[in-house]
Amino acid sequence: MDAGLSDVKVTIPSLLIMGEKDYVFKFPGMEDYIRSGAVKNFVPDLEIVYIPEGSHFVHEQMPEKVNQFIIEFLDKQNI
Image (cartoon, rainbow, N blue to C red; front, top):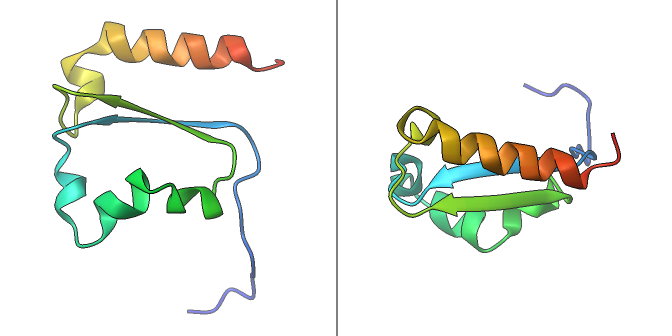
């Protein structure tokens, strides 16, 4: 489906919090796409945080840690 959009990017500061054991990394090419920084072609101002013991549901496993990362990220923004 062609929506008539080209060179679409997320242009606001963004945060991605991922568990190192996230099953998303098992999808072909996904781990390299994220870890290599290629994802920043579409989200240039992306900050990525990895939680070593986390899985796909890291926000449920370690809500305090995730909340702290979100608070720190928001503190860096000029909001």
